[in-house]
Length: 312
Image (cartoon, one colour):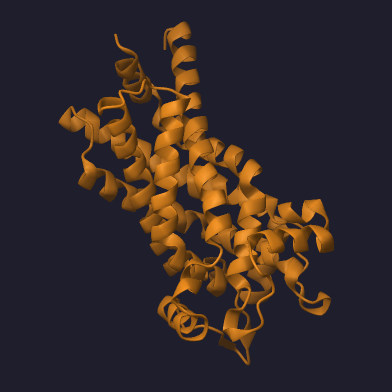
């Protein structure tokens, strides 16, 4: 049996429950490495909101400011929420995508085409995003807290304290604030990321380059997938971040919805502001995509070796 067929067999033999566990574990491992870029991306997206004064000249200035004012560990503010987000969002989306992929292969006896991969990515992204929105809200607030004046900081002790306080102080529905742009962003991200990764991987393996299954193949497919995903999803990510971080004045929200955010950004900050924080976003999403898929592939291969040795 060829290595390619062994890999496909491994995925088919993995129980559905473990597909979700491996997806979440891979995402959490990647997050531990790229969290500083996610924090910088969030600070950059909030900076200048409402035509206010921009706090940072660029991503590197933002990172320097965080370290000088909050210390090196300030770059990991909100790491608990980030890990919880991966444990919910990534577990759901990668587990669902793996399940749909395997179901497609078993039913049609062939690899999914581009259209099928995109549709499966949309479904997986929507499911994962809805499950992960509460952790996303907590993450955005915790990551942005350090930039606020002392009197305005929320000072959540940890992600569970954040979720409890948000529920008690603002109501349970607040945990799903920004769910529409979050789900929309996730659908775009997963349609682009998961589908393009699958297609790039197939191209590098079967096209002129004839790459063998392994980390080099996963790295090349992931980096290109991450670049396309960054370009496609950033406007919705900015809308999601600002809605989740907004405050209420006299009982009225700062933004009416996704299109209100995008409209204000265009009017007040210009078209390019829709891709504000592109560098840290790609530095976060690109490597996160690479590491997540590499970790996931390694977990799948490790399970297959274990299952084969145990005769499972």
